Length: 602
Image 1 (cartoon, one colour):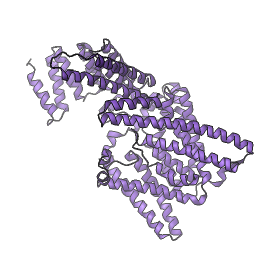
Image 2 (cartoon, one colour):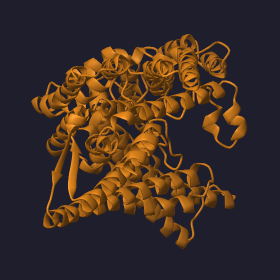
Image 3 (tube, rainbow, N blue to C red):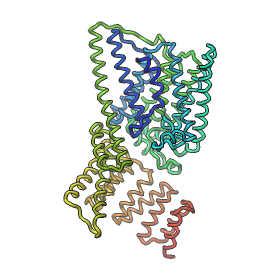
Image 4 (cartoon, rainbow, N blue to C red):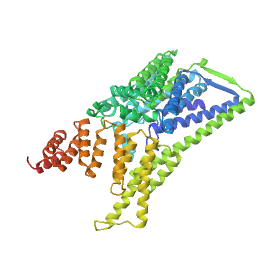
């Protein structure tokens, strides 16, 4: 059974996805990886009981993933603020540990003659991926499954990103060449044809993906120079240089480390969960320890004595991808499979135990497996319930169902900050919906709520604030949690007495965490406008256009506050700047033109 999982299941995890979760790709693969690791450990323990022998493989994968696990663990202990989120991050310690255990156990279940079967499965998974990419260009999958909206994109593929698909397709080419050569030597014409077809599919998939993706690169990928700047900024603190900022706090490193020049690029208002490459990412989140671990892994793989030249080429390409290109969960999984292929028989060691030793060892192993299985189930159930809640809110428009599902999700995973932030917004939405319903039922300008509704609204709005605060407690350095809390308070202005000051304080904290973000200045200026504090509003809108000189919305809001203060001359100048920045055929252009005409002449 172990050999079956290793050969026929593991290769397909790299292209697997589970549309049962909000993030069907990385979260789905993380759950698949950890679940299969637990299953393999169970089977390995059963073999220990049956044979009274402990069989382990000490190979390059064990060394590499092992030191990555250790560096991640040290980072979690010393710098992570939310250690639970750090553990379950797709590039966190549990992922590295799972890959370590697979490298330790899987090679003991396969022999040298099975390596070609594993290569065939890797190539088969790649070919399936390539065919899906080709089908996407003809909208075949969208026609077969019309209810799945994401299939409408010609760039969709089961890895989740075009760059991950390119990694797998590129790496499959040298493996297919190896199979083509082996099949030719053995006069296996059918296998030769399959290998040749696999090469053609991979090349076609790469060409199509790059043709579609290259025009979008500047709008979706974090450039290496920006990633390097984020790393250098984070390393200014000695603790961060050694241990990193923590895998749960890359958002903080990004928002604090990005330079002002990013506001002139297409990604100025984008958020990123990883750095520009895995090397830079590990250096940022795990510090010097993390980058040293990855480089050690690369060195061990590079000097591994591999007789197959095509596998050496594939490993070399993998190292290049890890150092220079965006991080990818599927790429890490392919790397783990390559480490299995590089394993030799002399790497496997057998330790024989007495009956008492087997009993003790099996009890320990089964205890760890049951403990892991329990928390794996809780995490999986929580993610599934969270996604069902999001679907109930956004697609089914069923607020009550979404509310109940979210509570169940938070019971399973109470330490996930995004659950609380989403639940806060849900409470706010439900409270506002009750108020809006009461307004519609009454014809007069004033309206009143029934005692029951008033109690319910008070409870919902109080809970919105409480959950928003909880999110900032769980992720105190995450700008999105603070801006979420600020927007909640902003929506409660006129309802809660101190809401304006609380909203301003939350926005100021968000600005501290993301100082070059002009949108936050605009949002804070909006709060000041509502309080008729035009001087502070003017200061924030001016800061917004200083941070981003081509920010049309910033100039428009600046013009409004200038009109409110009676400065029509400068207001007209600001509106003229808006005209220079928006398309002449847009409705915004016509609206601004009318506003300029309505201003009195000097």
